[in-house]
Structures are given as structure tokens and as C-alpha cells.
Image (cartoon, rainbow, N blue to C red; front, top):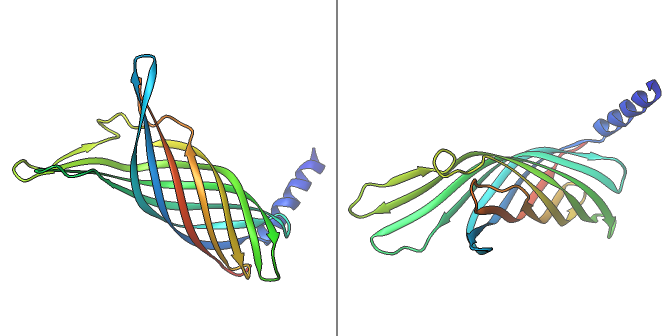
Length: 204
């Protein structure tokens, strides 16, 4: 047991020694997929959200090829439905997210690596509101966590591909699919997110 703990401590120390702090920013396109109960089947429709992520994290190198990347990010997403006079409605959401990706580097040249990654992402909702505005009626605002039956917590699985330049810059695109049902009741709701991010890694 002591040998196992010692080995684990050595691995942790090596990872810490090779860790790189990074900052990242991303554009997000989220499709909120809703499955409405209709008899014995479900009708599917989606709402397209656009938004961004900003965050800070660490990249842990197991070797020159294998790495673990994790970060703490703030995400903001916005959706506006088609306007039918005199109504205008939109929805906005904000989250704190914690992605954890295991990745592999494939060397393409001395300065360029191909990156492939997979892993989960954990999300906690900060706010989610439906807002309706009209020319004659006062704006109404619905808290989806309080009144809409939304769950604040979500977990998704994701895939990622990108390039790394000079071990400093990363340009990646990824896809995340929410595993948990976001709403209560007989209907189901899941998120599907495509994001493109630019990351800068500091010196080790």
C-alpha cells in the first residue's frame, strides 16, 4: 500500500511539474433539443443559442504525447425567437462549466501538433430566463430554474480536435452532448453544443 501511495505521489508531482496554465475563449453554438411527449412517441424540435465562453485552466502532460486538460469557464448563451408583432421573446442562460479532457498529440512538424481529445464536462447554471416584450404590455420575465422546472446541473460528453502551434497556441473545435435531462416531467430536454476555442498556454 505504501508503494502504491508513493507511486501515485510521484506521478502527481511529475504532472504538477509539467503543468501549464492557460487562458481560453470560445464561441459556442448550442442546440437545445426538446422531446415533447406525443402519445407513444416524442416530437423533437430545437432552439439555437449563440454565446461565448471564457476561462482559465491547467494542462497536465503525462508525456510528450498524452495530456489532461481541465479548466473553469463562464458561459453565456442567448436565443431570440422570431418576432411576431407586437411580441418579442428571447431566452438567455449563464453557466459555470468544468470540462475535463484527456488528449493525445500527434506531431505533424517541429512546431505543429494535431490534438485529439475526449472527456466529460460538468455544468452548473447561474441563471436562465425567458423574457417576453410587447409594445403595450409590461415586460414579463420567467425564471426557468424557479418556475420552468429546469435543473441547474448538467453533464455532457465531448469530442475535440484541433492544432497546437509552438506548444503555446491551440485552435480547437469540439462537440458536447448533454447526458442529463434538463427539465422535469414527461418531456425531455438535452443540449448539443459545438464550440470553437482559442487557447494560450503559458511557460512551464
